[in-house]
Image 1 (tube, helix red, strand yellow):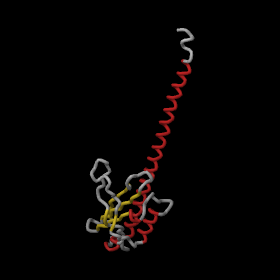
Image 2: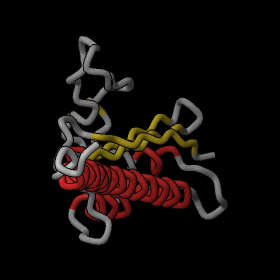
Image 3: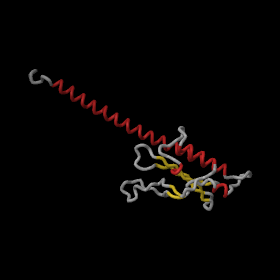
Image 4: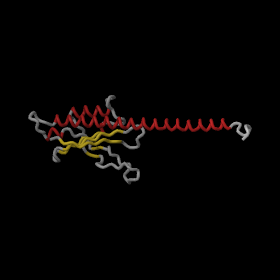
Length: 175
């Protein structure tokens, strides 16, 4: 091949190499944005788990008499928004009830127990532990003394890009 026919081929090879390199850089930027969103979600879930563990521990200690026996009346005083919500939440968009709000608690019964009110404040307003878009109406503590002193704690929050609220639910027993 003559030199004249190859004139400019190096420039085309360099441009193709630059385009391939730029596509790789753009893919890395997209992956980083995705990983930041996943990390934020994991942080919220971890914080919700810590908050649920905290209130279950306080309920376990606070519902006992001086001899260590569980007092049903005291245990019932820990209930907060005990009605509403659903026990099974459909998360797949193909489900007919995909938009069911698992955090729609009602009944207007809020606990007057200071341990619960402080916990709800920590979930809702404390900058160190606050979950996004969470408030007192999105937190639930259900006490069922008839089922071996079962306590169900649900913490709800909604991230800035979430279509529906997310939740963390733990079932514990105070015995």
